[in-house]
Image (tube, rainbow, N blue to C red):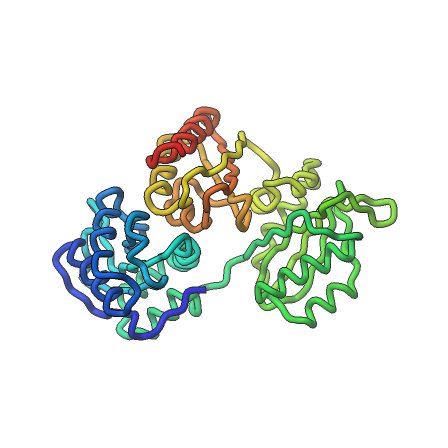
Length: 366
């Protein structure tokens, strides 16, 4: 979880160029004892490789892998530029978040930041903020609207259906969606059998979200199979689209797909359409800004709608044409990305994406 203090927020800054902005942030990172003085060179080198502009007026300058040895501690500095800075051609940044990361911790920071900053309204508030607390609240999600969350509990070693439900409930509780009373209520309830081995349990909670739990071995409840347990934690009505998709999946005879790798993507999108492929990321440091931007660039070359889900992450499916969303998946080396393309050039799109990933997304095959 990203934590910020007031001294990490630089309000009302004014500089002439992107390089000046980076120098300012690097200097503050150095003063804070997070990096050695030479880290600025890595931040500038990263920009030379690919601009770190995310969209919505936000940039996230950070160093290269070659300068990680200069990082003492992972941390960030945030600079606000109310008048804006041209970060890349035609792209104006109003907030720049300088990141120092010793290894892959920055992927977690990026994931949280991109989730918060995907809101255009939040970006505008960051530009216009006049106090550090407002910026801290926005960046840490304290003022962000709560979206439906998704979690996967795969291959859980359950002996029966109730243990699978307990595992899902515990996962939701550990994520802060509910408390011990929620878990007790779930265990006292009777899950509904949807068909094709899929069960549904629901509980009132502080956060709306879905947990998809699958057992490590075949289970039964009476004479009915148990291949997946869906736990719905409901704080409001934002879960209704997923319930509609469940009904569509049942009508299409595709409920069994929920137990597969693309389960949560199916819950979000409804019955399968288009073509799908799964590729493994080989980049040693995952999808940071440069390879992430390359992936998005390839996806944008095709007309098809392309969605991607990190099967080793939350499983949430997002647009493969949004850099902010792709980086927000928190993809590390070895993670499997499931792509689904729908359109006239869907087959060519998946082929092009697969070739780009195999080639290292601009970083060379390893």
